[in-house]
Image (cartoon, rainbow, N blue to C red; front, side, top):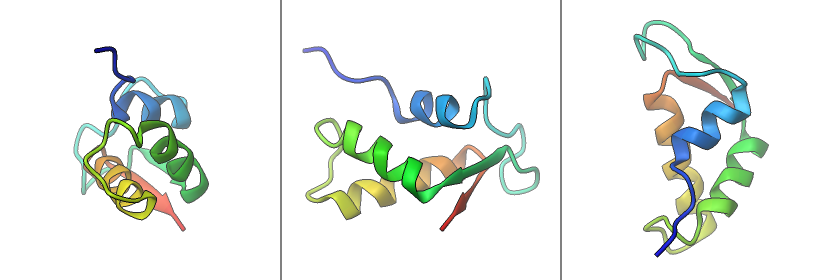
Amino acid sequence: ITKTPPVSFYLKKAIGKDKGSSEPGRISGGTIKIEQIKEIAENKMSDLNASNLDGAIEMVKGSARSMGLEVLE
């Protein structure tokens, strides 16, 4: 079974950097807009363990925060 790339791949591509923050929570690794997160969630919907799009968006937002990215609403 071939799956889509990991969420972190899409997040790094969206912000245009090779990696997130080296110290998440202390140093910002960049910013990402909610529209970009929604697009990533739509692409990954088949692979994520979410019942609807809102749940998938929350999963992607959590991944972004754990990479040290600031989510702009």
